[in-house]
Length: 129
Image 1 (cartoon, rainbow, N blue to C red):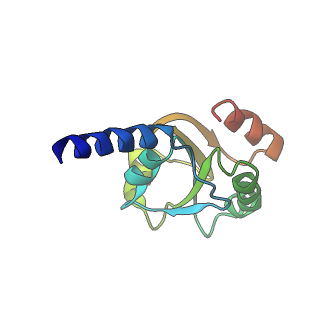
Image 2: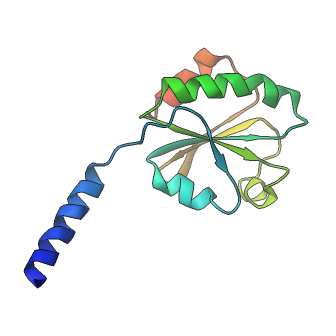
């Protein structure tokens, strides 16, 4: 039985290596508690750091929603409320919102601060997708 278990384990490692980004067509909730797990679970994650009182955040929210649909299967989008999750905001030095953190393989590779048109956001995110 040991040989069979080894074969199963090897096959499972191979399958895990072939996994791609899941088809998630809307932003997922990100918090201080699940931030690390979230950004390490998917190859490319864009985290929208926002607050309820922030008018520019509300302005960019529909664009983020649309990008989540457009890039479903390639990029996972998340939303982090900085008022409710101050540890992550402080850790990444979020000084202005909205801020989009582009996380590739668990590491920050880019950040987008402020409101940009959809075409400019796509151009920046597309370089990593």
